[in-house]
Length: 74
Image (cartoon, rainbow, N blue to C red; front, side, top):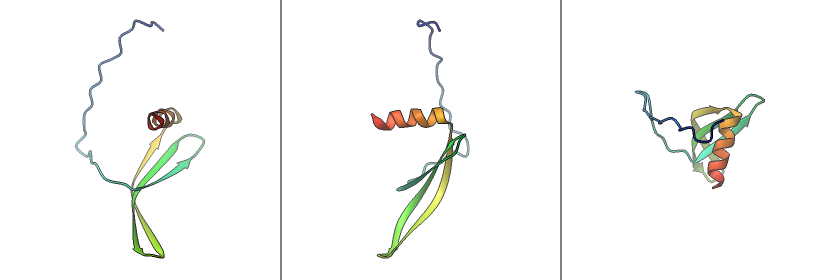
């Protein structure tokens, strides 16, 4: 690998179905092939019960999960 090689210019484009949402709950599920992050909204209907409404699941390769881990650790 050439240490003087230029990095490619990145262009971030939002697709037509791009959306943002808030999550105060995340469940991590791991398999041999990938990591799954399930995001949801937790609310307490009564003192004895918490309801989590999952609204999005994201699958990550092990490499991307490690990159996310590194960023969160900083």
